[in-house]
Image (cartoon, rainbow, N blue to C red; front, top):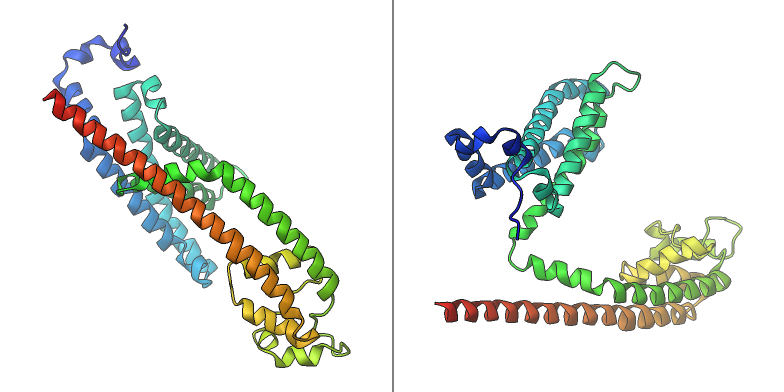
Length: 306
């Protein structure tokens, strides 16, 4: 069998094979600490991105201050773009593009790095869209690379395998749940349509305003149309103050409204969600048992070999 081909750089420059400097570079790039250093840079970029966008996050965006921050952060963004481009070039030069591209992690990192670099060059060039904020928008996706650190957490592989394993059956359960929500939303629209409103002439307006529903300003939670009804049912599904929502409709049309909400609670929460939770736990335990058996068999193989 033919072994893996040498990287393009070594084929073009055979002298590198005898170069001690090149061998030290390869050892450094393949060393664990190289990944650790790049992960530190990723965490730093995530922290800086949060600090940079903190005024927008907190709702205290000052345009004058933003311009000053832009000028200072641009240089930092350019430096990090250069660092990550240099990292990708080093990895490709050492491993070769074919070997480098086999890793899904490398594919994601390379795509984000190239897109960020192209946007940076585009912003540098004189044009009508010379907006440095484009760099920050693309650089925000670079923070997703931090997710690869989850692989270092014990049990993360079992969690990911469980998630991928349950997706097909989860879609089937979600379809059943969606049909049930659609049915209950249609019933709610027919029964409670137009009940929740702020019209003073409405016979329900005064009673709703005096309830906890009205005092909390929950008027957007209504069955006046199908989309609004679906939103209300989703809130009931996650048990988000469902008793407050139920209180508003009960104040409007009477205690008989509780039958509708209790029926959906029993079907949606007690039955469907418990099935989902039980299915996830069963899949996780099965995946965990498989991984444990694989680990034990590997340990026994190693002990027999010794």
